[in-house]
Image (cartoon, rainbow, N blue to C red; front, side, top):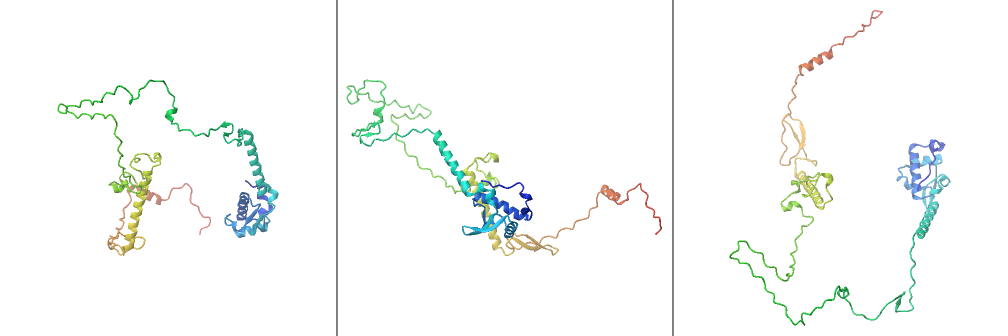
Length: 341
């Protein structure tokens, strides 16, 4: 939804009597009422939301751009002749357009969608469902193996009724262990033994840090660019989303917090420094200084700074300085006063 603003707005006499802050409030409020569909009403408590002040609203009222009033028990301001210029932004007109658009979409879908009509169900005969017969007699369960098609008819004899018995299985002779130099493979049994369940492996906990396994992420990564060991050699822009890299980042964050807390504890227990960790000391000349405390005793006395020795400039620099002090030759003659002083 949008609201209309005349291109001669800047030259209107009412606008010329308002300040820049009042005009900015009026413009933002015009956009706000079009978005909220308030029909041109601006509540008083929304002035802060629109970055306006009470005196800006008073100037708009004095200029005739706003009118004081109320809506649904709320005090506020009405835009002057809002419906005359922005009737399309009122709630009633917007809802009408939305309703027409919704009906148009529904009609278009009904025309372009060809759905078959459902067949009526015949409920007069309990044994029939629609136009298909339904057999309600009890039937035995038929497995999928019995429903498979038979490729060819073969004459088979049941092993229980066969006249000839199957020959007995004889295992192949085993290898001679005395003549072999390398161990032979074990013979394959006729039937595979039942698979033994593998013992469940203990997975590491997600919050377990790599440092607990004898390694530290600081060996292959840094805090500015945390990586797991698998992605340590990749460029920064080619690292894929990785859970292990996130754990390394968490590890570095935790280490930084631990170091920071240790530093805070040392500052709290130290009697020579303040809450910033700075200790007051002096140098050999008696000048007071502030240094970073090391929290292992009183701050040391610093040596006095050496006085800077004067070093003369090189000869070429001295020549340039001497030339700067000389007056430059000029073609003009000095002025001669007509009257002696």
